[in-house]
Image (cartoon, rainbow, N blue to C red; front, side, top):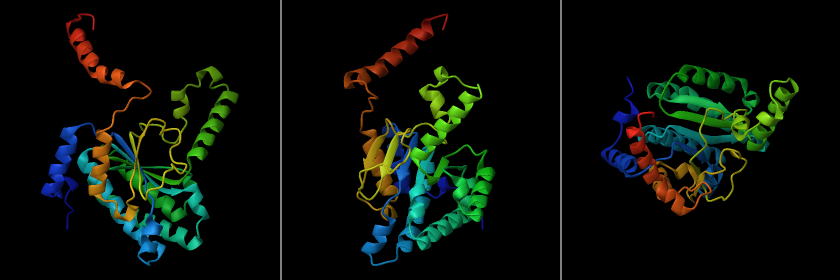
Length: 280
């Protein structure tokens, strides 16, 4: 049986909410999510931690679909950190099995809906079977032009920054780069997130107030949204609430509020002047 495209699966309520968000203001171009609280969600219900991870996969499915339907261009999910390898072996095995299952079960639907799958992190640390299916998924979807879904797997922000420094030092030693060439833009090009815009919005579930070594360089000016909702309960309604909160904020990037408020009118004025300038 042929699967319908996600755009065809929207309920009337979903359509109305998507229209409200897309018409009502500026959506984030890139949303990054620290998916936290699976274990606590399960423990509060006297279940095994694995049950929390299972339910968390349903949240992944819904948020990926909602992002695509909204028109969010980039979604990055913190799925497994380098520090997570320290967890009990049984739990790590469950997480790897769930990741493999997600990729196998969802790949065709992701592909049919134009999603391009990407991954960052020390991927060679993943079990071979997981690495192979991940590579297959990225290869199959590499030409898709819809949502760019990035999975942070065996990832550490400090590790990525340290790796970038090593690569830069190597290029300096080989004479390919001089110290004067190392700008912020050049440095960012050595990170695994090269090619992705910095996140506009970082969402963290479960109420914890920390970044947990996630995208440390890239989140310098990201808006941060913390919700008490555990990840297994975080679905599109909670996601839309985070979007509304983001859209109500004023992003200043170090400027004053007055400067930001005058920028749009200056931009419009400049466009008008450019239209009358024969040299533009």
